[in-house]
Image (cartoon, rainbow, N blue to C red; front, side, top):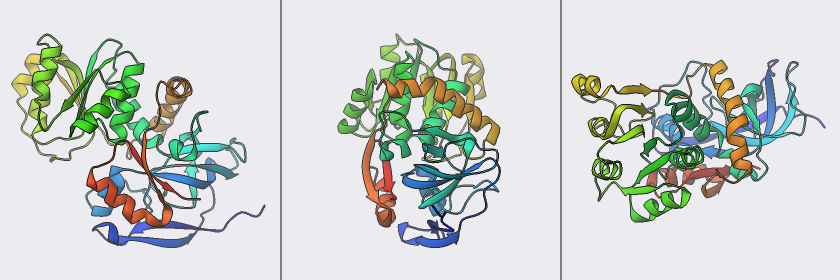
Length: 331
């Protein structure tokens, strides 16, 4: 079989709404020793893609201008040191380049597609699961029996975080924006669902923990949630910041942090060194993949769009209606 020499991808011509997305045709670059060429079956649509399109995301220097951080597909070529089988079905974390019919990926950031997963399911795993595993499990060091509050419980990240925390034996609180989404959080395994528009998450968390608060909060809201999160944490609690939809600038009461012995961490997945991401991939395959095979954790796919409808996929994500992941069906 002759290999393709060109790929079709999607870029943002300039900063703006979904209408700035444009299909481009480009040559497929020569593979490095540790890379694979994948025929893409499906790609995940994530919040960072939208922020990149809007010009609100600081890109690493080596980032791809073609959007898309996660794919599923078939290996059709490999670099000289790569060992993946030609024809292997994989899902991959990428530094951009996922919205395309062919993609060059680092072998160390590829994982075999879990047994129970279709192409669309597998494409929705990498970005969210790498984010959750690194922040909640590695940095946050979530322990069995600990209480964790997850904001944005019905986001792609949130739906995986609920299930992973529950599978790990944690007590899970999850916030969402309406009764339908709260019920979705509970169905995924949250012990307590909180409608943040009509309920006070601090009040509920403290009531259900005997006034102590939760050990871990994973937050993607920022802004005015920061001080409230600190209030909601138990002694020696950990606050993990992964996004700031309500703003990056906050006021910090250092005295409260000191008195409660709180640890605050924050990270972006994309600039994380390749070696650390590769280590996360290995941990996920050892610990998370068995949970997926046992149906303790499953990808939640809200809607699948044809590749040609990428603008509609972005509009839908920005509408905030979704529960779980949004997927592009490439081929």
